[in-house]
Structures are given as C-alpha cells and as structure tokens.
Length: 343
Image 1 (tube, rainbow, N blue to C red):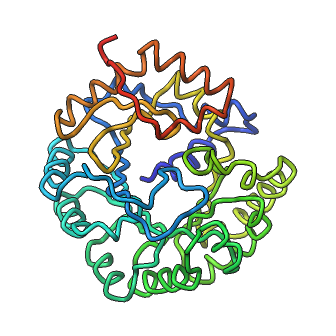
Image 2: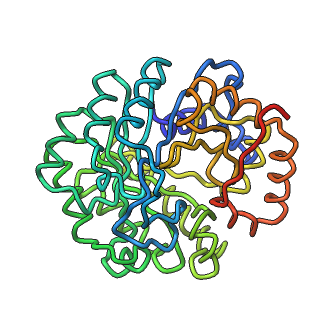
C-alpha cells in the first residue's frame, strides 16, 4: 500500500478531524523503533537531469563525481531484499538518465519489492513504456505542472510539456499504473482543476499534489514560487471538489501541510523510511541537512540503527527547532553535515 493511500485511509476513519488531529492521524502508527529495518526507501539514484526546475529539491542537473557505481547500486538492492523492505521509490535527478536504471529495476522486481519510478517523463517512449509494463511496477509518477505548456515549462526550465503528455499516454496504453504529480506555484496554481481533468482524460491512475516543499532550489526561489494563503485556500477547495467528483474513477491525493508543519511531528514520530542520495549517503529527511550513514562504508542495517539514534541527537533536535522557528534555514537542506549517532 502506498503512503498516500494509507494517509487517506487513516483520515477516513476520523469524524470531523481538526488540523492537528488530521496530521497526527497521517503520521501516527507504531514507533519506528519497533522495526528492524525501514518500511520504505526513497532513492535519488542520480543527480543528472535534462531540466533546470525552479523548485528542484535536490538542485539536480549535474553529475556527482562520487555517485554509486552499478556494482554498488546492485549491492544496495541486495541489502534491501535481504532486509525484506517492502517498498521503494526511485527518483533523481532524472532516473532514466542513469545508465543502469533497468538493471536496478529488474533486480528489485525479481525480489518482489514494490517499486515506484518518479520521472519528468521526457525519455519515455513506447519502448520504455513497454519495459516498465513488463516489470509490473507499482506505478510510474510523471511530473506535469500545468494544463498548459506555458505553466509547465515556466516551472520546469528546458522542459517539454508535450513530451510529458506523450509519456503518460504511452504508459497508460501499456497498462502501467500512471500517476501525475503537480507542484503548485504562483503561476500555475489556477490550473489545478484543469490539470486534474486532463489527468483523468488520459487515463491516469492517480493525481498527487500538495503545498510546495521549501527545499533546495524552491527555498532559493521562494519569493517567485510560493502561492499566497488565499491562492492555497482556493487550491484546496478545488481539490476537495475534484476528489469527490472523481471518487471511484481516479485517486486524487493531496497533503495539506507544509514542510515546517511536518517537521514538528517528525521530531515526535520519525518515519520508518530512509532517503538515499546519489553517492550512497543517507539523509534523515529531505528538509534537514543531516547525513546518518554512507552505503559505501556501512551496511544498510547499520545505517538504520544510526538513523534511529540520530533523531535523538541534540544537534539534530536543536537545528530542527531552529528551522521550525526560521523557515529560511530550509535553504541549507543540501549543505550536508554528518551527524554523530552516538551522541
């Protein structure tokens, strides 16, 4: 089950929940200390990208000289299988620019691990769509940030809206569960209703959106990207109506909280997941700069133990509180720093 589906299921069990109850319902569950391994791996497999998106969390578009080799990547996959981790998502950069992406996908699926691919779609032709269909992926998520080329390409610098549309059509034609992800900004938020309608008309399985994450380039471009509260209010009103309109026809998922609101709760209840960046280092969480392990030097099992201890580290707790008090510090999310899990 996807995280988004589980989130919606938890909310559906509440009666008229307030904002705090809603967020707690989404994040609640068994303590991450109860697990011998993570439940989910988010893997940024490479840093290379053909686009220069204004909101890119990873500030992708280059190649890290120390990115994991094919052998190291497959060893990582082997450890995921050995630990019986049920679900993972691969993104980038642009993952289809990774020369061994299909070697990784095949290994993961041969070990019955549920896999989602997150892509800008511009390299998905009929051949790629067919390969994804043969792999029986959980889903392929394509970034589509507008019902028009102008809105999409303004956010996704050097992007091609038509190619993203064609990618979705190829995937749907080959029976791949196709999800659309939409990032709202000042210049595309008004297209949300039309974007959802377009996703349905293309045969998409689901539509994902929520508040823009103030991380990476988004933090640096915040003044030109961030919608106003009034715009967000209209945005979520449309989402509620579209969710009801497409019930039973297409899943519409949206997360109504921003990064700061989530960080407040992650201090109380860290998620049972790991975020792996292209060179094999493992972050505590996207909005924070802390690295809790290195797959080139440590086992995945050991890193999971480091992760659990790191959330109790005074340096992590204090910096997170500073970020909550001053969101401008989110701009430091990619200025990585090692955290001593033994502190």
